[in-house]
Length: 113
Image (cartoon, rainbow, N blue to C red; front, side, top):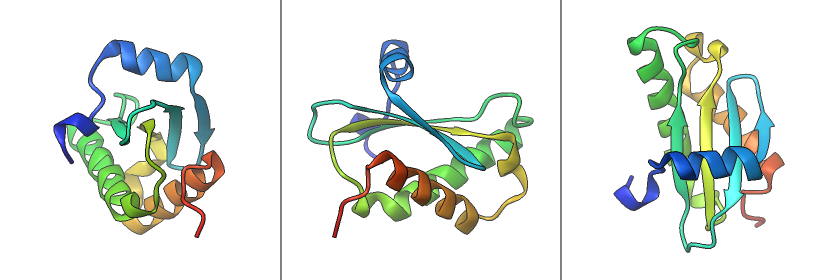
């Protein structure tokens, strides 16, 4: 993932939380907002409620890998925050990917083919 595609500023996160749309699933919550750039920017979060650092990093890796597999299907020009839920601890990558795919379709971020 390129540096320009990563959300880092508190201002950006706050804008997405306050003025974006949210969609919740079993393993992941998605916040999204149009950014008027030609590319998507992403933020992956796992709070301390999810577990210790090992579990949180695994949750972020699962979400990143699932997103990487679906990247070609997504519309461009959105800021997206993916937040891990506590239930992500004991699941495989394909289950997370199914959940994220459902949420991204619900959010209208998947290209119509």
